[in-house]
Amino acid sequence: MIGASAREKPPVDLTSVWGYAADNQPIEARVALKKLDDLDERSRALAGAVLDMARPPLAEGDWNEIEPVLERLAAGDDPIAAQAQYLRARMYQVHRSVPDYVRAEQLYRELARRWPGSHWAQLGYVKLGLAKLFALPEPRDARVRLQQVAALLTEIQEPTLRRDLQLQMGWAGLFHDLPLDEVLPHLIAAEAVGGMMGITPEDLTIQIGELSFRAGHLAQAKLYFEKFLEIYPSNTRRFNVRQRLQQVLDALAHKGEAP
Figure 1 (spheres, rainbow, N blue to C red):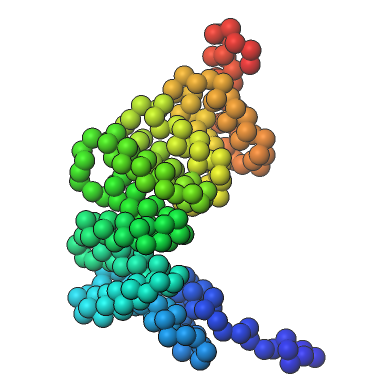
Figure 2: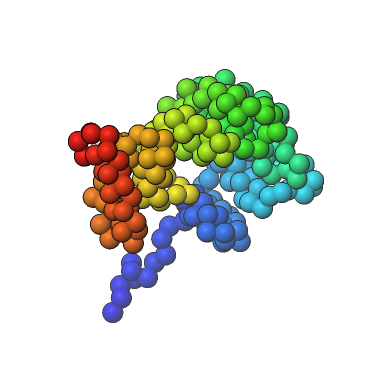
């Protein structure tokens, strides 16, 4: 017989709300939010705004309801205010049918000014960096784009956020066909942290090995191909990596360098 405690549902809290939202269950998320009788007004308002933003782009009527709520919350001086300011910037960057990147950048920089070093300020710099790398039409010079984003990178101290932006900087360098020696340091820095989203660790390890080989950095290519073979013994691409590694070893031998 199953005891009563085993049949009880887990308690509802904000974690439950965010879990439903992440699983694309907006109705369940709103029901869970309504059940939180002891939730303070600011937390409830923020959660409601987040759920209202769940389907970009926003209609004009939705925008007119959500943006004032976030503006009011952002006028405070607590973690909720910082998050609300971040969400305001994201609305201009992502949720409008026509993004307003200039306004988004203004809000991100105001966020960093008011809450310097906070998680939300650093996350804002990551999102701003992505816009500068891929979305904005200017500057046309890819190196200038990377230089601007490198300036943002200096403000980011959280290792995982630095990793995310450096990975995108490396991919942007590849997209814009920059020399591999300018691309590889970003990919190597991201790989050293690990836990990437959007690419598996083994994919990035192979990519660094391959790009290092193409750039003529044979010892570095050898290091990453051997790392792949050691860490991912059951990966289906081991045969191809072994072949590539042998090419690297042959090239090192041809140069008279010890394999």
